[in-house]
Length: 108
Ligand SMILES: [Cu+2]
Image (cartoon, rainbow, N blue to C red; front, side, top):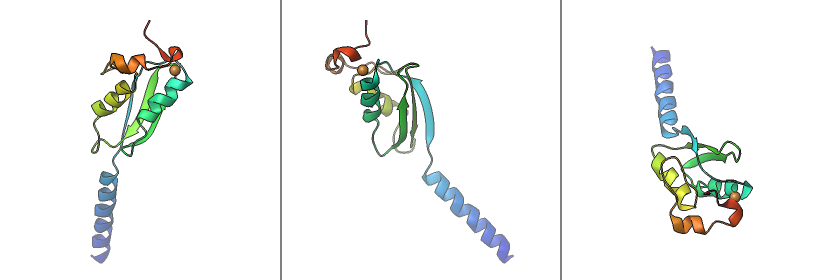
């Protein structure tokens, strides 16, 4: 009986810990050109709510691991757009785009 209580208590604690640190992985397209873009895009997601962010200049794909209970996926898209890079959901404001160095301008 004592063992059963101990085991169930263990599972309650484990599930509480897992729930508290829930993270989600998302991959989506972000427009950009070079390694400077990579730095800018990843810097835009250098926040506590994001565990990791990695953008590939060749595939234009960004993979991000974040805490969905703390920040929405839309907010992540918006942060990137505000830095000057179009995402699948949000277009960068013209003012932000104009601030990009010439080598980073991806709109033809
Ligand atoms: Cu660039």
